[in-house]
Length: 245
Image 1: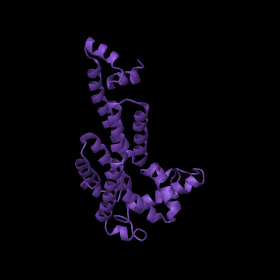
Image 2: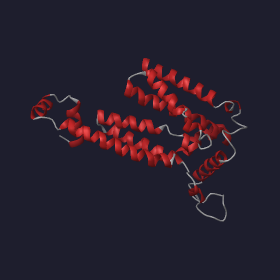
Image 3: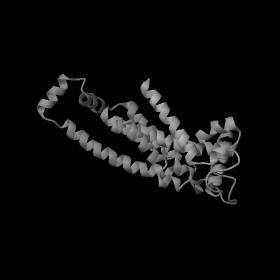
Image 4: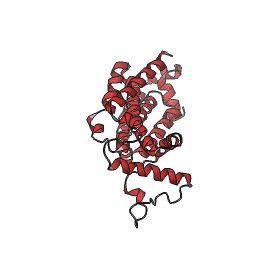
């Protein structure tokens, strides 16, 4: 219970900081848009077109009503279907497309900070260090330089993906493996760029930990006999999951 309360307080602080860092947007959620009137308005159109197509059973999904007479115009830029799934219920409630976009904009900071907090708390066991890491990740100069690119701001699934990777190598299970796949796909569908970048680092991560994993289990004969006796040990459980032994 204490842990859940702590996460609740951290989430509240991140919400407040997201509002402060994006002022005065929070006072004009319906009549203004974050950053400028270039790429943000294009992103609003993408959300609108994909939700419109979703309601019609994905009819003419790729053929957006823009750049006539060209076809498949939705592919001219990142089309972030995962963000559309988040926007769909928000738009159903608010009935306001600009408000929906701005809520997604604020949510990108809040979720990015929170997921990095969860990853770093797992690594450091320190709530203070994790809170600072969340701030750095969510409000770093790179992100503030891309306020007009919603897809580049939406990076919260990267820390969660790596959190499940760490948990998998610590305690191999199909739940953790499914978490890796689910959040990687979610991130790739939120921003294709991050999907490509993440795949590279996930590959390097797996190679490194697989090397450590192999060294861990290539122990002496005495170690193997000890593992067979102590079947509750994490090394034995990992062998059972990975090799069915």
